[in-house]
Length: 279
Image: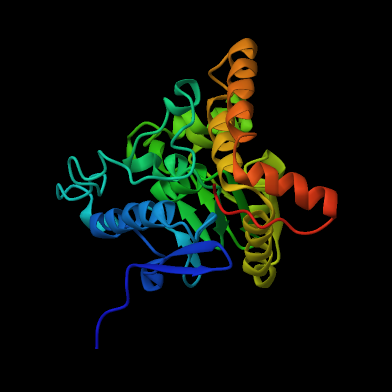
């Protein structure tokens, strides 16, 4: 009998759900597991049947960070081989202009570069690198039993993998400083109060809510428009107003030339659900 995959990958109704699948270890990451995860993100990003990507964990944890047994062994790298992701596969939004495209690359920011909305369903412990992977998603929902922790200060390292860049943009410098400096644990309720997650839900309601939320986006939003909006959101903190305004105008001109724009306009006038094709 073959072993269960370290990352489960399912697709339904336009939603790819990627599940960390090492529940006996609270989904703690090994280098192989992390590399597989990035690979599955890229596969979902390239799949024309996928409109939205959801990330969650099997069992009682989301992802408890790097497996401590590999720390110090020389095996706790990024999980991506050199050159492995130099040429991303074609995706919706490949024609996005340079001012919105410059942040796209590969590896740890695969969730950002996917061109598709990414949603973290944090169902338990999200520590260390698991916490950071959740930060890289566009939207986060948490269960009431979720626990978060920026463990870095207690391990004698700085905010790893851009966490010191992401956290202040999400919740502000004072709150980010508190979480990073103290390395304290906090629950889903506090995460919602801090603005780190969009909502906290009862444990049993988390995945039904996230699944329906993702399906609504997949069914009702044009894929290329989502790709452009995602790029706008991730560059918003680094562009001035005039640059952002000009980029939006350029992307609008591109969008109105697409079949999806004509379908969106027609479906709106006809008061029916749109049937977007990504063209």
